Structures are given as structure tokens and as C-alpha cells.
Image 1 (tube, helix red, strand yellow):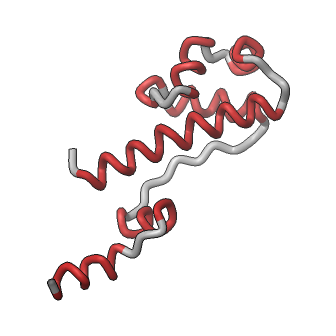
Image 2: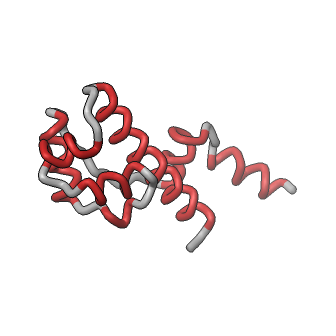
Length: 101
């Protein structure tokens, strides 16, 4: 796996788990309540909240979104756009700087 793929994966793992955790806590729900509301097992919810996104499927995310009454979106974007949005890095500028060195 390339460094940029690893960074994207790390960001997704962290952000998805954090988002699920914060939405659950904002509702005052424990993991078991979210499991009951969503039909997703408590084990899978804990795994997702701990950054183990391999436990996620589109169906799992859809069920969680429905329980939270939110929309779930999955999208792909260029690494350049992702670096700027999530890390504050300008891939073009860094490329130009490397060319000049």
C-alpha cells in the first residue's frame, strides 16, 4: 500500500469511527441501544467506533444512518483533493517544490 493510500485509509478509519461515536453519544445512546435501533450488532458497532472499518459494509452504514436519521454518503475523490481537504496539504505545490530540488 502506498503512503497516500495508507493516509486515506487511516483518515477514513478514524473519521468514520469518531462520527458514529459522536452521533451515538449526542443521542444519549449506549452501544446496545444503537444496535437495537439499527439492527447492527453491538460487536460491529464497537469495531467501527474503534477504527476497524473492515467491519463496515454499505448495508451496515445504511442501517446506522437510518437509526441516526441521517443520510449516508460514500464517495471517491482524487488524492490531491483529499490531501487539501483533510490534511491542509497542496499536492501541486509539493510536487513543484520536489521538481525544483
